[in-house]
Length: 145
Image 1 (cartoon, helix red, strand yellow):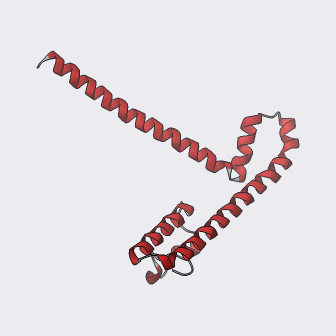
Image 2 (cartoon, rainbow, N blue to C red):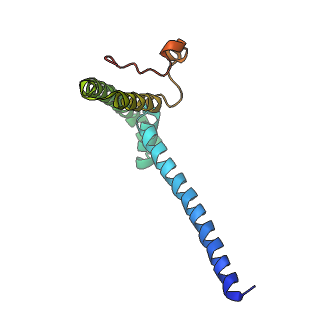
Image 3 (cartoon, rainbow, N blue to C red):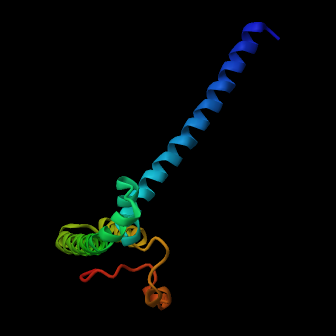
């Protein structure tokens, strides 16, 4: 085999391995950032982030605990209110758009709503939504559809 061909193949293999490793590391870093942000909106994650940031002494932690508890709960309630308002806004949008859409467009809109529901219920829907009758499966729960 020609020496130039060997070097070219070696370069391509190293480049390919570097691309794969970079892709995997980048995905992992993004995953960690997203998880950290998601945890911030839970009371436990909120308190943890502030403890990590401030690194209080045990005495400080004891005196700060009620304040952190209060704001952690308020932070969680604020996030849940935002999610509820956002879902209602999207339902209203879907309802107001429906008269202007063709059949296939309505179908795509329904699929978008289902994707949003799945995203909201990452670990599956709440227990009372898990066993839906077969004729309701795959249908959105948006009024007007």
